[in-house]
Length: 402
Image 1 (cartoon, rainbow, N blue to C red):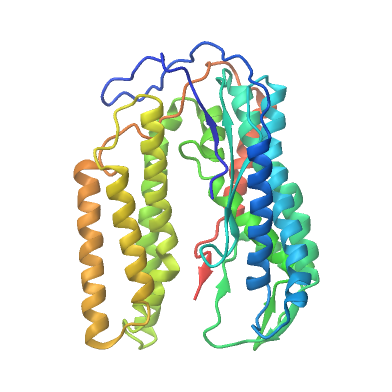
Image 2: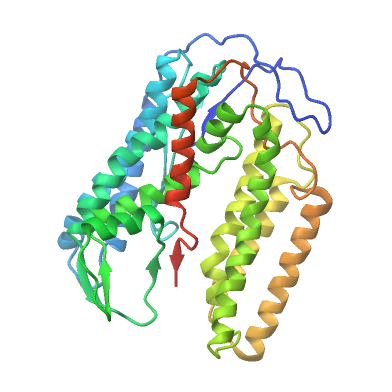
């Protein structure tokens, strides 16, 4: 689900030595290439179909509705979600063109239901030139999330005002909440009496997805939008901050899991729902590993010391842990005890490998490509701080609760 702005540098860029925190210096300016669009168009149309199909599956509670009624709900869902993503990506694109950075049109990534409950993994923009200045880096990095939120926030406000109250169903899933969502619910949504839940309209649900994706992109790490913004604001100090931000994702997985389990223990349920609690917090472990993969790819692109734990090993181990967690979610009794004991042993071995060879040792995988050391300016510094603060306002401790 990354909306990162990826820049490709000259293959002649100097290599950083082991343990170096400085990224390669800016290479020669790359001549702007003709703007290709055919692949981008086909991917957008495929994403349009993928999001629409997903909307017919996730925007209704009943499987008995005729397809025409499902399609009627999927249309506003699709229009809202793609409107947010298009605004986000063209915010990056337009800012890049203003700063004369050679940027491609967005490459949208379809991922239909049931593989994804959103219908897409977002989009990426490729940049063939160098982002030479901190001001350009800030403008390009911040333009995407801010443009997306300009669409997402009013869409959610309207959508939640047109959402329905339904009877609370035991065991029904819940969408995560953030400070921003709580404010919008209080300001625009109906009062929710005891025993009732708010069933988000298709527009509100699509806007929720848009804000969730924006939250991920605003993580101040690596080649995500938040990483660009933080580097523009902090300079090379961001290279020291990024590994701690990455490790905080893993720490949050364990803290969140412990809080869910502790709540059950205090209520007298013991460890009966351990599978559900792992499922509720697995997102943070997955994001930790996903960012490690992106960091490894980035290190290869910029000729830094790579992660000794291969991408293939990391992906296979992560996918294996996720699949076992999903399949064993409802396992109880002796079978469940043995399964989850084995799962946590496997996780422990995987993390031990990360300590020995991977991202839990000293590394420079998230070092940002360097720009000039020029002054960002007061106005842009404020924009950077406000944009990064949006991550706090959008932060969802548990994006989806089962």
